[in-house]
Image (cartoon, rainbow, N blue to C red; front, side):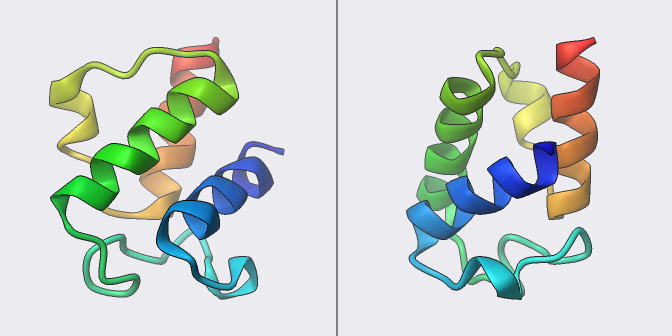
Length: 76
């Protein structure tokens, strides 16, 4: 559930096909996201999941799988 919603957020921000996004996908290397893109994705995550992600945690996210784990931890 979290993965599918996250995939939609990422696809919307980066204008990529959601089917190309896996848990192993990296934001910068695979998707070509820059720091502003990552910031927009984090903002989208916070809005979509109604959570708050501390800046220090957001900076450590490099893959979609790590983002899913962070979302799950923030929701529990």
